[in-house]
Length: 595
Ligand code: JFZ
Image 1 (cartoon, protein in one colour):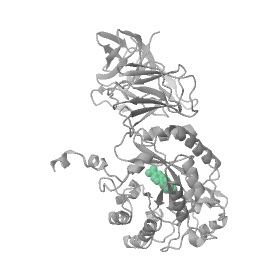
Image 2 (tube, rainbow, N blue to C red):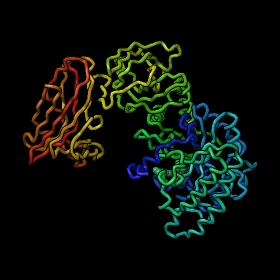
Image 3 (cartoon, rainbow, N blue to C red):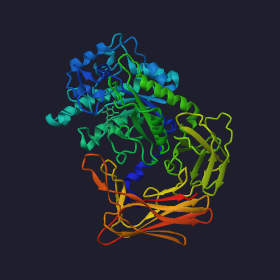
Image 4 (cartoon, rainbow, N blue to C red):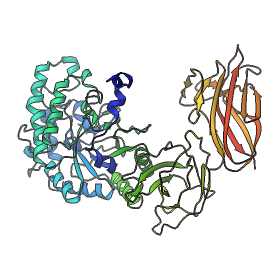
């Protein structure tokens, strides 16, 4: 029991050990569908564009203050004979997605199924009568995909006692809200969990902790227990509103909309994302993400043990916008060839983004082969691919797109693998190189990666140690003032690098000195070699024209050069010391081979 006092609760709760989410963690890539009455409005109401810059078309009823009766008339715009949920499932399958999550009930409160407990539903208002959840469920079953259901539990704009934001002004009493909960939410959840066979997940959508909302913890526990009773294997996402500290029964963490992962987590997690901006169909949507951007998001999440659920917003006739369809199909083509690097894959031990050529994923196959996948976003012009930090020799390297698995020549030297690439990638978006190992490849922790074209960029990202309570100043003024530290106390930083090819290297360092003369000293030590640099004034620069945007200049200064006599690991130590009066700001160190 003592342990509980030593380990922060959050850490315990985040360690997820359940079996329920195994399929989810394996599958990695799913489809989100936002479709409902709002799809008929297409982001406009009586000639007026959706109010609010955030442009979420599915929010039109609330934003443009549409009365329920008028909103319901949007059913007239639907092409009931054309709508075919199976087409969405087929598209998901073509895209390489393994599960589909649809808005069974979004904030507007309109149910997409034949809901016996509440007649504000599609079955009552479509001609002929349709039950979209039933049809989608059948299509998912037919095509072998899992079905998830989005259910807006907290917000409901239809029920007089449901939550909408105006209740912040007019208030709602707990008892009335519980009336909505007991007569709409609970019965509808029961319907969804009993009428449509296996439900892969219920995707709740309350992006606040319950303590900040009208919803009580008891109400959330009631839902959770109902799910566990009726469908014990159904996953529950963290937007239920219970924190994982309170309830470890929440199966996966949902990040913010379009928010990609930053850190590796041991707990299953997912990013809900859009191809453009809005979730529901929006007639004037125009910020389409490219296929390679979307692939990069998927690969980046998988490399941090995360999932990616990408949204489609079909129209009132069921059609999926061309811009979405083409991107999804292109992703599917890529996955047909490269899916092995995604499905059943996850994070490798090295930081997934440490190399400038792209990202890494990893898997242990059923046959016991360890594979690291190198995802290249740009085919290196020198036809060489450098991998830093793996200290075991691969048994084989090849392109994932190459059916013959023709081995690529490579050179292995202690902690550096240099791969000879063919002239052209076999795939136009992201090329994947596979390295196979008999055992789990060991790594040199904290090694600063070499850039693919040569050289080492040493900064706060890849330092092994840094003393003091040095505060890193984040970029400001739109990044024109870069990330740096104020050298207001003597500071020592260290990096670990591996030199593959011995020789001379230039040492450059970037800083800002606003004094008229030298205001400090920068010293680099590598073994017995030392470089000492007295800071020089760097002056000012202008960030943006005609904006009085005058900022301190950060400039690169050559410190000198050091010879690395033989191949091997080296410690690079940096000492910074400002004069007492005027202090300088420091940014980075750059090592470049002299050819
Ligand atoms: C919610 C919904 O309001 C929206 O309509 C859509 O369904 C989306 C998937 O989820 O919107 C949110 C919820 C949470 C955040 C942002 C938008 N968030 O936490 O950043």
